[in-house]
Image 1: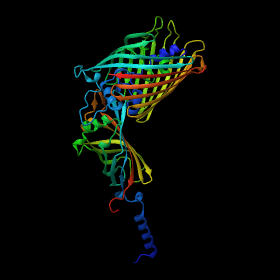
Image 2: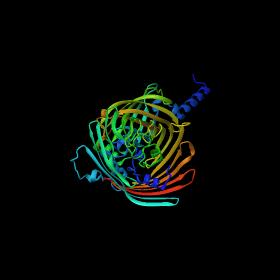
Image 3: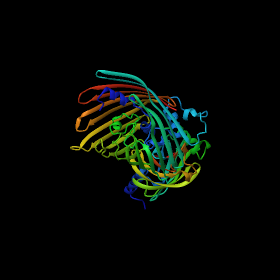
Image 4: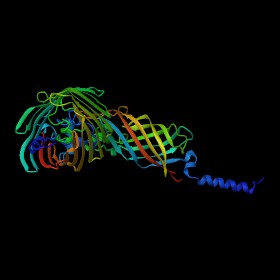
Length: 204
Length: 369
């Protein structure tokens, strides 16, 4: 028995709506975001007293949503070019890169890479608000789990993300820097902010 | 208030600005004096780190090259002692100067050796021993003595203690000790106290409390119990809030007095530092007198090692808020090479009630060897 013409028409319209819908209401498996830049601020406590900020805007990567519901797992990675970190003091930058992060040693040392990201309180691509997160950080050729907090807000082309977490340098085999009696504490605080642009990916 | 030409000359003749870096170094994210100085209240002998930073970040042409060994240019006397000093730090501070003061009906020009000091410090674990001996002109006289000497200890948790002769911690310790927020509060170059200071030096907080029998150099009957407290909160690496209090008990010569102050330091860019400080001064007496001091200082690095400073300052008199002095201080601070510092300062002081002005030009070659 043939379907009534009206039903066929309604089905075609529905299918068309699904195919033409914006990313926010696509299925979770198709969602991805691209990050081309951001702001990474590392607050480094000094001994004796005080603190300084090390900064870079060299943040890039691509994240894709692989499942649905909470927690929200993201495939892909975010990477920071460590050679771009600046503290405002040239000699300190040089020591940071060469002696402590050992960037000249190459792969594994030249970038900090966050992957296996799981947003604990997020339940889908449309989530906006505060969430705890976990991930795996590669730093100084050591891969360690980390956890932090973040907030996701709406942005014109995707989402605006602000996140913070603490790092213990010795966990990553980095000897806390010390120079002529002035050193830094092993535990540093990291603040990250970036805009993730919805990215349809190759051929989509 | 500077009431006479003689006093004006005397005050400014001792205008020994310390190496003019410390408050302006907030712009480089150094909110604490102890990053570069042995003294927790700033000024005086530089630590090895402070010396290195002075060379690498302050001097116009002293910065070491990445392609060759840095050498010992920044070390004491250009490193002539080699490694023989071990953990002992030494510093020689010389300040030949030229002072020109002009006011209504008078003028004075003189060349003088404003400062000649030798300072030494040693860190032994968590202990620091500091001693200084110096020569300072006082009018027609010259005084030679140890103006600062103390022993300090700081634990791993940041708790510390210091005992000896030192300047109490209060507000912003500007390099210019004639600043109205220093001299008016009894925090001039020779206003050190004998005392005990307890402190907490945390990552965001610095608390310093001192108690003692009073000014080390007080004349007979002028010494009185003195207590001070200073709390510094580092809101950001380039934003600092400071609250301070100072109390001096009654002596045979003066009534009990003190001050409460608040200061804010910000560095919106790596080349610009802004400091402001406001103090309410009080003293016992009929009606309970009050007076105030206000200060702002802008320090702008025009080019590496070339700083321009501008500082409006106001000090009112006890019992008459319309009296006092208004000062505008402009300074050009040149640091052409490690250890070499040329400071040209202009002071315009106007007495608020009489309108009498005093103009002072001070040129200093500051050698920090």
